[in-house]
Image (cartoon, rainbow, N blue to C red; front, side, top):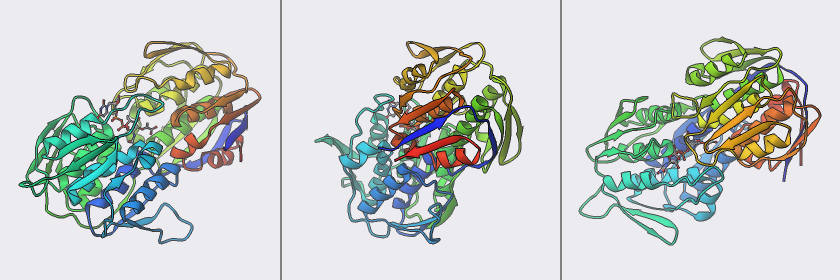
Length: 424
Ligand code: EPU
């Protein structure tokens, strides 16, 4: 298993180019299942979750072609032949986002069999809202032997439009139902829809494919079903979480970095907190120039759905707070178990206590390097940030979590002057 070894203390200087968003690319890859024509994608991040999703799509029958040798960000997907409508337990257990094939397969093939994901490191994460919504659209769904078995049965010939109000805001739930509704008969209204920019990016691609969607970016999506969708070309939106992660790294390690190919307008809540922490920022339409001198100031925050502070940035800003002057409270409202990094940050000398869904952080002037273990994707990023700011050597084990969601993170950090290496 690969590890990352770093020696803290180097400020970060230079430029970093942000990749396409993982959480936009994953549903967008699944959208190719809605048409028998090619989908051309650009700015697809090269990371493990994308490779896993491509493998699943290939098992289903999709052909995947990289037109430019050596450039994995540009690809052409063709789902003209679907040979299987199944996502096995083996696939779903390695990546929960595999659930995103359920809506498109059911809509196009009229049946789908997808393993129920189990719980995961950050929480129980049920998919009951995906199932409830598809049932509302007329699907017959049984849970059998750990699988969701979904069908459209006569007299229904296609899914039918419906008014769906989910019990809570769910990102992949909204995406699954949105994709399914594009090929339904009649109008679907999705209320309490997730407003995350990644949902909007998927909707933009679906519109290019011929879907009729209004309310994009709002919590009410209205979809007029069409009989067929066609091929399209799309560039995936830049990853706001990767951009936010590099900004936190600068806030913790110091230096001056130009973050390029990002979408600052999708990062408002994060930028407000980083400004309060003392990060100086100049913001352009697709870039942020960030600089930090001295120690950050502690900032309290709570996670919530977009446009509020994202849960996917909680661990990284906690690492900044760990070395900040002052104390802060961090409340996690999306996932019930997303504090696994706390024990590991404390191994580096942080002073963080957990009370219910709130972490209380007393900033320490200096952390000291240690061997720590990554427990999930964003936890790994927070440990890297802490390690870059710590005194001495830090080793982050189980780095496969980081590889799932970051495109060449240690190479990008090395270019910025960090002392970081991958140990095979
Ligand atoms: N929930 C239910 N029932 C459902 C669906 C969700 O109870 O049917 C609950 C969840 O357990 C959670 C809350 O609703 O407590 C929100 O979950 P959501 O469904 O929005 O999460 P997700 O769609 O599974 C996506 C991202 C996550 C990100 C969350 C929240 C993808 C592939 N994943 O997950 O990304 O944290 O939204 O923004 O888009 C990551 O990138 O590190 C990551 C975990």
